[in-house]
Image (cartoon, rainbow, N blue to C red; front, side, top):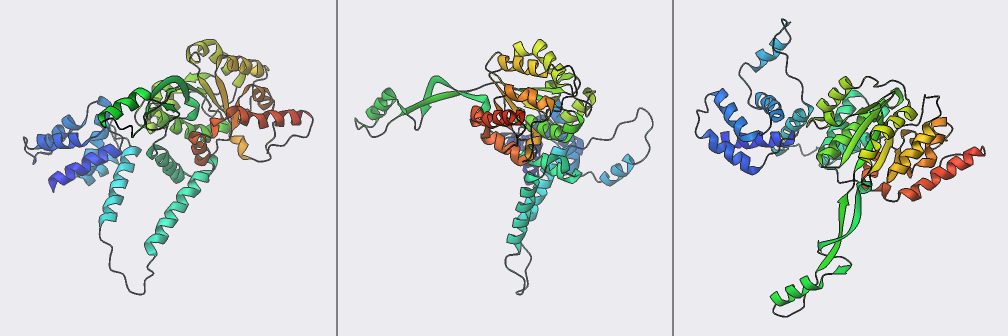
Length: 414
């Protein structure tokens, strides 16, 4: 029973984001054979030595150990946290949402593993099926809800959905090269590999080998508006960016409101909630005004040559409502477009079918973007990640036509 609990504990750590493997569970069980398992401190030290390999993992491990292997005086410690603390005392432990999600998932699995209670013969037989449909419908509604209308509970559920999904590399961040690699199928026949396979088969040419083009990852640079009108959308996009970074996406993130901030140091944190908390403390202009032209000028002057030299794609997430009266936005967007391989604009205002490019900032930006897409809910983010942006130049045509029509007083977005 104790060995089974250790295996469950390793699964909880894996669900919380720590790199666990079956070999680590075996090593942990072997280490526990050489200590006195009646001593809680020795068990915790032995498991920490076997299951953690970085300083930032120890905090999650200790929190998971205290919750999973409950201390007999655990309730007393929780009550002690409510008492006033003297200055210089030990601060209370921070809540870790990844650990809470992992523990909730394990509790759900144990609940499903229990045998169902005996039902009366008059009970409906499709009770469990209706419950599954209700859960699926709730998740679908959450995917379609606007980020700006979510409650605190829905935000927690949304963060869990973004963290739990394995995001594949964005189509914008990949490019076919002239190099070829071995593949099970393709348009390039590999005669040498096919001949070697025929020799192994005794001279019978029974199977063809192929080669396919190699796709390389291209860098992405995200410019994210964190002004007051974009606050809810920028939070969701930052969680999305953190998930992309965990999938080894070549991504650089900059935040802008009234000034430009490089956000990569905080986003390298393993826990997205800790990363966003650090950004909130670091950025002074969060939920403030917007000076898109001035911040783009700073990016073009300080960062563009370093970040955009390797066929990089620029993603601009903003509603285009610029409060800068200098009129430099169009000029800076043109300069950015010359530096970048492609410029894609993600605009939450495109969720409105009646949206028209009337704002001065929108009119200045549209001629210099290759694509214009909505980003207002999880469904739009997933559609963008699946490859909605696969044909950006074709998608830019409606934006250009709408802008041209609006100049004649008859524009409406379709």
